[in-house]
Each structure stands twice: as structure tokens, then as C-alpha cells.
Image (cartoon, rainbow over all chains, first blue to last red; front, side, top):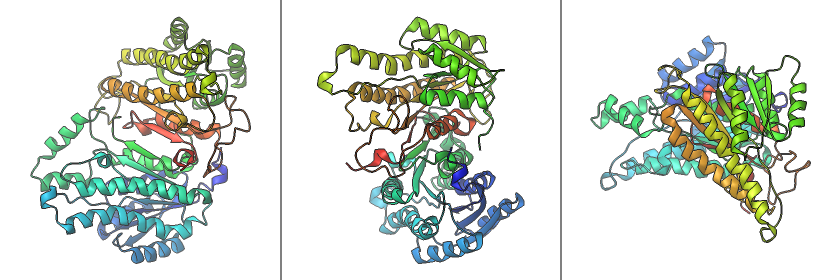
Length: 257
Length: 261
């Protein structure tokens, strides 16, 4: 197997959006994985990122916090550079930072459109670009982006659907571009997950969480909504040695086909 | 790295095509994780060899069978029933015939479709029957809203959605059908607590492709894969870690299928 040769055990991961929801679950899961010994947590939410880092450190995983807007390409580079230097390298970059601000097309302002496109798509671009120099020095480099089942189409959130479909194109393009260097690039496309983002979305639309989540559960073949930890498992598979021959792929974690 | 296999309620892992290639490696991996393995293949001598290699106190039960035969499949699954029922199925039995479409004879087509598609379906159906008979209790799936009765992993192929340079139309077609069978079965079996997924390997050195494998056109971004790379994906999908994943095709091909040419 590839594990022995892949430098596993000493790996460093950086996760954007690591303060809450899916990103926080990814930080926890990678922190538990044999392949990683250190996790950098990037987020705008200083308190949440601090909590995530403290939780990692309690488990004996080195952690570093970076407070930065993922759409600020230069600032992300500075943050990643500093994390790489403190944590001693970088083996896996995971872009999980996201926001949700929808509106029917007629009401969608350019600002709302751009905010979602930039956070998901430009934010993913910024993280991978910033990570690239360090990934090139890794014995087993990988990138995992977070797409969404919304890439198949989502009414009232065209910006989100477009951004997440964009993430798929970004994943495949970077897999092609970086594959010859041995850098793997994959994405996970979650279905409806119980996160602060989806709970806030329900609240902002005047929906009871139980009704909102219940309707989503009914749409899923397995009859329930997903947990952030279930997405994190797929990320861990793709980021780590078990996924060492997987690149350019989108793994749907949606509870259905 | 390999976590202990969390097979619901004991029972057996059935692996078809277990005498060689991906099936053999999968059977050995599940066995190593402590599972009882029913090893199915038309090659009885190959199964005996596998069993002897797995060691003396083997939990490996050879079940020689041609998967394209309904009665033989039923007989093989009777071995699983004796072990408490099939909880995991790996549908890895497959053959390929490399020849131009114009040279394919009826029998070539029937053999490939018979083993790769009909055989996979017969095993999938038999496994699902055993799985749905199991009462795992209301909380059998832990966080699952439904009982966790079993996991089925079909071995598809990247040529199931992107044909390669080698002419093998019956093989390509059979694997494309396995992809869709996976999705349909997943949708139908989800309410019963059975997850159905597929792994789509790129060209890896096995008896099917020869060693070294034929050179495909275009770049292999990560070079050639190994059978163990495929087995890693099978183990992931068969595990509790993939409990919210069903109806998915996980491609393990080092980037071969995203080539431009």
C-alpha cells in the first residue's frame, strides 16, 4: 500500500471555514486521523476558530488559528504562509468556508450574487493558490474542496448553485493541472446537513427548523438529513492515504443517489 | 489506518470474483479485518489457494459458482445464510473481451453481459433479500433514521462512462449498466436500510488487463494504480464511515477519466 510511502503520520492540514459546521467537523476528523498531526483553522469567526483549535490541542493535535476573509487572496496567502511556517509544512488543504444569502432572481442584488460566488469560488481558489507552494513540498499532497448537491440546481439560491457547480469545475481543472505534480484535488458534495448555516437559513426564511429539516429528510433516500461528521468522513478519505489514487472526483454525501 | 470493520450484527461478507484481482484483494482485506468471508468465483482452485493463503483458522468459506447462473448464486448465498446472512456484498466478478465491435460474436456479448451485469444483479438481489430479512432493531444504524441492514459495493469501471482506447464494447456496456443498476438499487433499497454504491476503477494491473497494463491514451496524472487503491475505496464505502453515502460511484483512477482526449 501507499501509506508507508506517503509520509502519513506527520501530515499538516489547513481547513478554511474551520470554526463551525462542516469545517469544524473536518478539523476534528483530520485531527483524529493517523495521517495528520497538525491542523490550521482558518475562519472569520475568531471565537469559533479559537474553540476549534483548543479542542484540537486538548486531543494533542497541534493547531493554529488564522483569522482572514477567504476572498482576500493576498491575505489568505499571508495567513497560509504563516501557518505553514509554524506547523512545519502542509499536506492537505480543505476549503470549507461558505455562506448562504439567497433571493429570487428578480430580487437578487449584484452584491448578494457576488458575496456567495466570492466566498465559495474565489475563496476556494485563494486557499489552493496560497497552499500550492507548500503542497509542492509535501510527499502526499492533496486538496479537498466542498461543493454541494445544490450544484444540480437550487431555486432561490442561484448564486449558491452556481458557486458550487463552479467548485466542481475548479476541482477537475486543478486535478488535471496539478496531477502531474502528484497533487490530488477532489471535492465532496454534501446534501442537506445540520449546520449553523442551514439553521440560520431556516430562521431567515421564517421556517421552523423541524419543518425545514423534515422536508429535506423526506427528500433523501435514506430518510434523514446528514451530520457534519458524515461529510468530514468523506473529506478524510479523500485527503488521506486511503484516497491516494483518487483525483478529479466529486463524492456526493447526500443520503441518496 | 484500517479500522476494524464494523459489520452490522456479525454475518458474512460475500465477495464475488474472489479468486483473483480486485475481488481477491477485497476478500483478503475483509478477512484481515475479522470478517467471515464467503469467497465466490468460478475458479474453485483459485478459491482454495486464497483460503490456504489466508491461514489455518480461516474464516474464509469458498463457494465456487458461476455468478451468471441463478441456481449457483443461490447455492453460494446459502453459505452466507449459514454464517448469519450476507451483510456486505462486493460484486467484483467480471470478465472482459478485448476485440473490435465488428468482431464481437453473440456469445462474446452474452458471456460478458452475463457475468458482469446479470451476475452482478443476481448477487445484488440475493444479498438484498438476505439483508432485508435481518431485523437490526430500530436504532441499528445509530444516527441513522433507518435500520442499517447491509452494504453493497459493485465494481464498475471508468469505461462505464468514458470508453478507453481498447475496443471492448460489451465490457464498457456492462459496466455502464452496473453504474445505473447501482443508482436504481440504492434508491429502491434505501428505505430498507441497505446502501448500494460502486467503485469505478481505472486501469489497474490485474489478470483482466494483464501486467503491466495496456497503455491508455492521454496522461495518467497519478500514474497507474494498484489493486489496494481500489480496495481502500471498497472498505470505505462498506464501513459505517460512509453511512450517509448511497447510490454513488466512487472513481479511483488517478485522474484517467478526467483526461481531455
